[in-house]
Image (tube, rainbow, N blue to C red; front, side):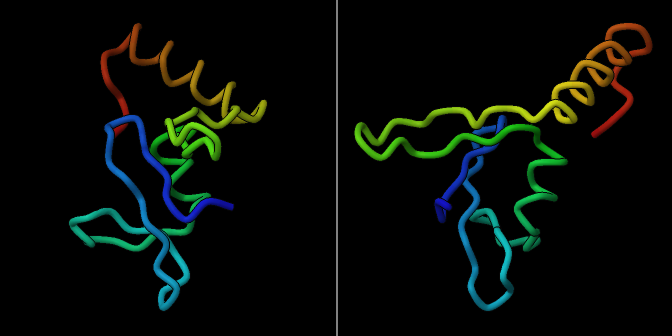
Length: 81
């Protein structure tokens, strides 16, 4: 597991051992990694060889949720945060 992730907005999430969760630079909230993925979708991680950011693969559930969200957004306007 990497200790740094990046979300779709470009915010980096860092591991906090005391809270056992991830936080952004603003340190507003510390969240479990699964919750960060739930909110922001697939995250990016650093590729060990090149150091560049690569996207995590989506699970089937994440894929279906993303498709449903995108379709609702298309039909009704943005319905989630």
